[in-house]
Length: 294
Image 1 (cartoon, rainbow, N blue to C red):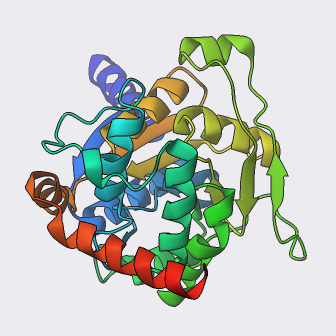
Image 2: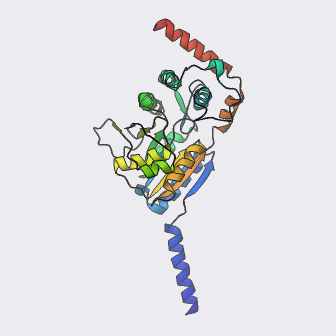
């Protein structure tokens, strides 16, 4: 009888451990490993109950030049809003090479650069890996810091690389929607956020306009009335993975965040460089644009 009791306890323990998984924060430089983790979560909770959420810049894609890239934008914005967003790794402030007089001016010029730019997946397998995850019934969505004004550029960057996303909560004939994030005062206070702006969601891409990604993901799930059992969030920024984990770790959903480090060396190389090529590129582009469109 004692042996039977031990076996019964062991069997129950196995069932519990298989169906209940502790939320976790991870880091990886390999999209193949990230895909395996997503599939592991899907095998536990069922693929249809899992949503994989991805960042854009320096996560799924990067621009084909430094000008307009994420590290470049951080370099440029540091001088303008250092009190709010200061990146200590940047050794050379933009200073006299800043292209914007304020953040709105920078964003407008950044939008022009994005519109002219092309992008490349950070690993060649990413388009195929995403298609395979989608084919297996795992929902995929992009949570990007890019704003509504960059929506068309973002759609084109993905389209040029053969990447599409699930359209959770969208009817087939619904091009997109704009909404105000629905959040409680308590949720915002916990994350030290005092206000929110409108968000655009189009064809599987959530354009957050630089807002808190944890809160924006929470608000989006409410907006589309989707309640996953598990979320896997992938971003190159530890600030954003920490924010998402903070929002969801105490909720009734399994949360896995993965900081994708594949572009770390490229970003460091840019931060430590003299930025001369990016400065020259902007000067040439700006002069050409101004001569054609005075």
